[in-house]
Length: 113
Image 1 (spheres, rainbow, N blue to C red):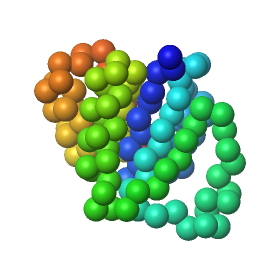
Image 2: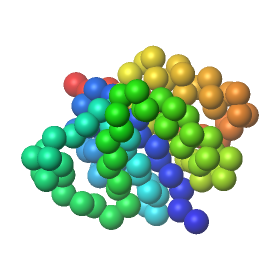
Image 3: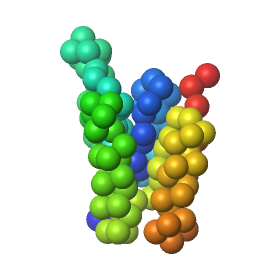
Image 4: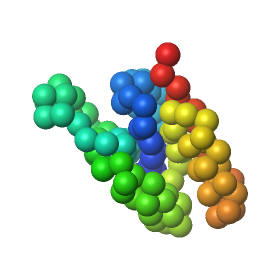
């Protein structure tokens, strides 16, 4: 059973993608959930990497989907890390972790330069 890194991408996917290629633990699957759509020409530039999944979600569906994925993976015991790109999301997901009593789930703030 592989562990999951759930990456919430709200402000630019490049930093999160670089993190997943450089610092992701072995045998861990990374799911980048991008808020908004990705243009087809941009999607064509993203080369596929084993264990790294990129999915674009409409803005209105972003937080409901993230919460569902978080609950599903945390309750299954597979959620290892949640990667966020801003402090507001960091606080929100931190409340979820405390609410579910999942101290083993790590938070990582990955802000764009």
